[in-house]
Each structure stands twice: as structure tokens, then as C-alpha cells.
Length: 389
Image 1 (cartoon, rainbow, N blue to C red):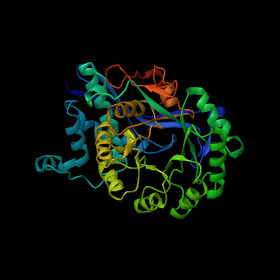
Image 2: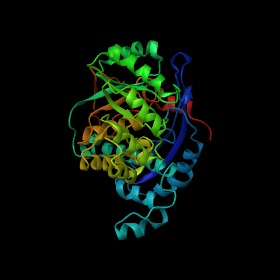
Image 3: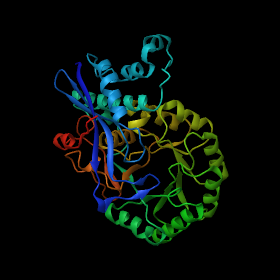
Image 4: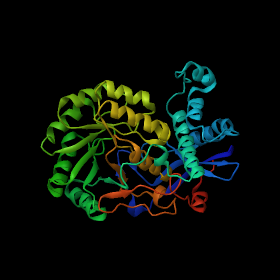
């Protein structure tokens, strides 16, 4: 089995005005991603996704160009089952043979950002192909699954204090969720405004629904501490991305301030960044994004790190279908995973890009049973929303 073609598209899907929301990312009017298709000489097709924006909207001309013009030619003729070897080849670049012989990484200077996003897309697609070629779901190839269905949390929460309880309550009613996440931080202004929204949410939800908050890295260390003090009695399940990813020491300082669990990692790529978070004692919960951190291969390595440091894993899955399904398989197979992120914002990149229904019932999401990642791309829909780059 050999790779005969690899092609990526910048897929941009409009979000209906009635379903748009505003956050620190601004008014979100589209959902964007780089979607990759890899085909083998026996006709198998694998789908991957690469991301260079944590939110739903972004510009993907650069990443798509890299995939099509720089990465794809290096894949042609390779055995798609050589997943780890291809990962290391793309990561180490011109020194990949030397690195393989030496037994340690020798990455190119471009070892983060778009380079690893491109590797992520390739890696996800190759796991999809391997599963299809063996007639097995990816989770089985990763070592088996811990459950047929896993807990999911409703991810959204942008409403003001007077209506945040109603918004989050609608999530609980819609899918039977027992945990919900709301946004705080720069979208609110000063910490006391975010705190007022959180207090309103807790009052509406009661004590039995787990409540998480996500600042998207927009607080300073000082303001993150102030916010934590203001909501100390709200029993938050975690405080996500209090400060920017570049300030790992600051994140560790925030975590040391109190007993509130800290989650982070959607802006990090490769196991090396997560190792640093663990060594610095900066987080309690790793949140790698499979379409940005290095794909399924790297997400599983990150999960192993979490387990080794007695931390937990909950991947960032505000994403398109290839990334989301990749995250399901990682969560199913990783001993450190415990809950799956499920977007309650408008997400046509999942719900319209694939044929299958993706839903949560009784707060649980089913782990796919079909070979590969377990979804079918609606190719006409993809073609209709592919941008010219």
C-alpha cells in the first residue's frame, strides 16, 4: 500500500446570523479549517485536519499551501502505515535520517506553528487509512477503549450575567450534560464582570452541575488571581487558559495561588511543550488539540505524559470532524482522559461536513465503531465551501 495523492483545501463554512456569537475573538461568522485528503494506490482515503487558529474562524491559505506544495510531495510513494516514521520525517526535515539513526529528535527551526499543524493533518489522515485498511476503529489500534460511551461537557457560554444561567441551562436540557463550560476574560473587561457572570451561572445551575470557565489566555497573572479570589466559592471544575500560553511561569504562579484546577494546552504543540507544563507544575489538565499538537500520534504521547505526572487529559475539540473524531479515539484509548469537549456553538464543520449524526445523549457521546476514524465526509459539501488559495 502506497500513498498516491495528498490534497488540502481551506474550507470556509458560513455560520447563520441567528447562530453567531461574540467573544474575545470577535463576531464569529465562519468556521474555517484546513481539510486534507490522502489516497492510497488501493483506493483507500483518509481525512485529516490542520489548524492554525484556536477559535472557529481563521485564515488558512498558508497552511494549505504548505500541505499541498511542501508536505504532499514528500508523502507520495510512502507506506501510509509508517505513521510514526512519517511523523518524525516531517518533524526533523532534512536531518530525519540522522535523527532516526541517533535515536533523538533533531527538528528543523520551524518546529512549531504551521509546521506541526501540517504534520497533525497528515497524521490524522494516516490513522484513518490504517484503520480502514485493517477493518478496525482507530481506538483499537491505539490499545483499546475504556468505554463504549464517554462523558461529554457542553462548551459555550457567552451570554451576559442576566441570561448566562438560561443559556447554560439550555445545554443541560438539550443533551443531558452534567458539566458545562462558559467563557470569561477579555470579552467581559475587568475580572469582576466575569466573576458576576460566573456567580449568576452557578446560582442558576445549582451545585450538581460541574461548571468550568475558559479565559482564552486573556487575563494577566494578576487579574487571573483576582478572578479566582472573586469566584472561590463557586466550586469551579477547572479554570482554562488563565494567561497566554507563552507565559508558562505565570501559569504555574496562577495554579499555585489556590485549589482551583487549571487546564491548558490548546495553543501548545508537541509533547515537549506539555512536558514543560508538567515539570513547571503549571496545570492539572492537559488539553492538546489533535489538529494542532501533532495529530493522534502526538496526542497519545501527551496523554502518556499526563498519566506519568498523575495529571488528566481532556483534548481541545472545538474543531472540524477529522479533529473531533480523532479526539474521540484518543479519549477512548488514553488512560488519562475523563471528559470530551462538545461544542454548543454553531459548528457546521462537524455537523454538515459529515454524513453521520454527531450528538450527545444523557451527557454521553458514543465512541465510533466503524473502521478508521468512523465518519464519512460529505464531499459535495466540502467542494462547495473550499476556498481558492
